[in-house]
Image 1 (cartoon, protein in one colour):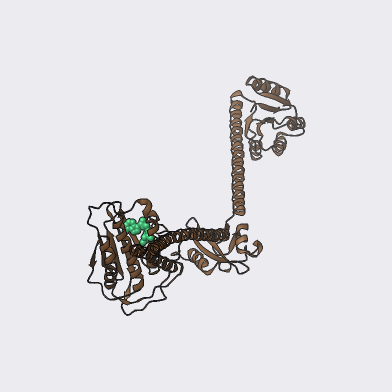
Image 2 (cartoon, protein in one colour; image 1 turned 120 degrees about the horizontal axis):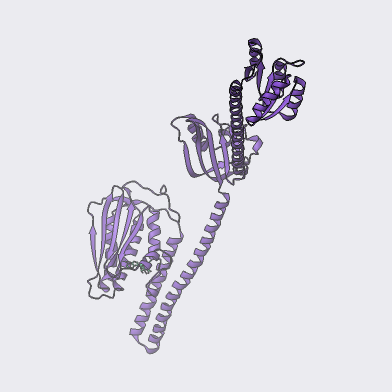
Length: 516
Ligand code: ADP
Ligand code: MG
């Protein structure tokens, strides 16, 4: 503060005080009466007014009231006559900041000025504080609004359906994404529907329990499910959600839905494309297999022709053997293809798995002997009569033992004593394990990775590449699984785990067929 308006009808006082105040560094304006003072005040709004109380015309109290009227912030010091306590009190009541007595002494004036200064200063600070507070509140409000707008936009523009409810399970947020999935228009859902009206019972239950019961789940991780749209379509969706809390109180729920229709459609198309590719591969493999067989048949018939022409029984015989072998392969291949192409439920009947294993070993004993391979059996005597599909066991073991003998035949390490072991084990109350091991060529990782694919064979014209694929299909249809362990040059073990039922229980249809 440095501008003062000094009002007194006595020119001497005005002059003396004016000099003193100016000497202290104030800008001083003077007036000799109330009217003049108010005119100056209105024009210049000084921070402080010092006015005599007794003046002709308008007195000091009136000046004080007018000044406070115009600007309540202005500090006013009243100069009273000596001992005029009543006027002083009246002045204070009207908001004067101080009063000083006549004759005005410098010390008294200095104290009054100091107090006025302080008041002005405090008021100023208060004003600044208030304005900055107001600014802060305004800024915070702007920020909150901005965020809420942003969140609103986010919710509106989200591709996912977002649906939120209040604690009474009434839907309060339903974004355009949700509109696209559920089909109901916004206006017929928000504040109109409850979760039970919009969600399937499965999802509604989760939300209702979560919101209303302490024991209910509070977070629902992504899961695939479906919803029922307005027009009755079942729409596949991914759903997740959570119960909303504020200060420990449940205040509603939010759920997110992703439309899976497009993804499902693409999946179906992909599957179709894959199937077509598989068909192409199969046909190519088939042609290759047939070509090999035709080769064999042609070779055989050439020998037969030669035998007839030259009347050579030896040639005739070996040609005929070749033809028979290839007829055998044709029928094997056709049977395998038929088995593979048809989905077939296993036919459970009472049987002794050990007997089947022994049968297979006996059946291939001759072939093994020709290849100088020994066949050993290691059959678990605790395996009882059980209900299984004996044809599946038979075919699977036949394929595995044939491969095992071949593996020895293809082994170039002639120093070995080749052996194939067929073993059975009662693995647990409902599984039997079959192991077929050999100490033949073994296989590389590359071969192991391709074992079960169609027409994969390392045996050239002697293999069809269907055996293992068919074996795995049968085993899986029987609810079992097949594993392989092998090391190149050392040998291979194939293991089949097959579930069984107690003997006497025929199980034909209830088992679920694994789809590939
Ligand atoms: P194929 O016997 O007609 O060749 P499979 O499907 O029975 O067809 O076998 C596929 C391939 O797996 C065989 O060509 C061979 O390379 C490999 N294989 C299968 N069993 C064995 C085994 N016991 N030891 C080494 N390799 C094996
Ligand atoms: Mg085979």
